[in-house]
Image 1: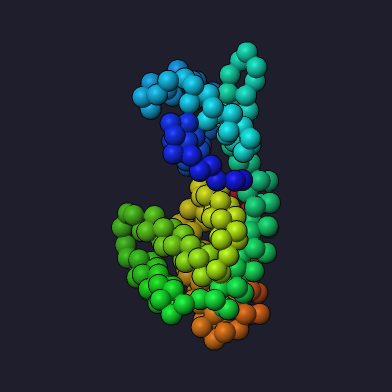
Image 2: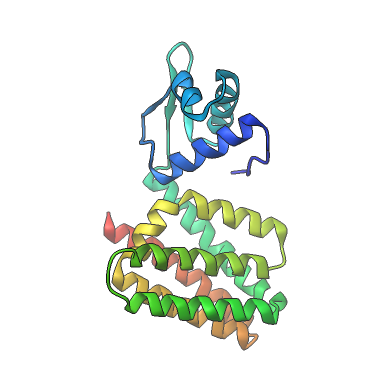
Length: 217
């Protein structure tokens, strides 16, 4: 799941298509037509073709010779596998964050938790999206606080791959409340310099999300 760092036309096309596939704009088995995509994005077929090949390497697209490119997407098993792996890595991240986090990053996490609690109490449309966005910000700060470029990169990539499932899970009110409570627990453990507890709570937090997804199926 290597991030494709390319500022060329093919890189831009790749990132756009990847984002749309992960966001559910394209569904499983949808055909990705080079001409149509090229016209929509204002590029020739060449960067589109190259982007589709890169997406095939990531397992998001299947190219069938003489037929076309079709969305493979992320299966439910893929999501569960990612969460299981991610639970262990998030635990490691919390442990390293306990050892390396700055005062500024602690303040950011505090603010995110407080904002999450505030938005959860609000009524009306858009609340779920706000809570989900704050959930992503909480984990992003944790990844940065681990002081490991490699771990941050891997976890950020996993986060993108399960974006849709994560949004559905966090959007459920009961799960949102528990998720924010779990964030608070992880933050408190980090502030107390309790790396063992922070790791255990972070691991459990991700497993809880996965179990909630199973209930929602």
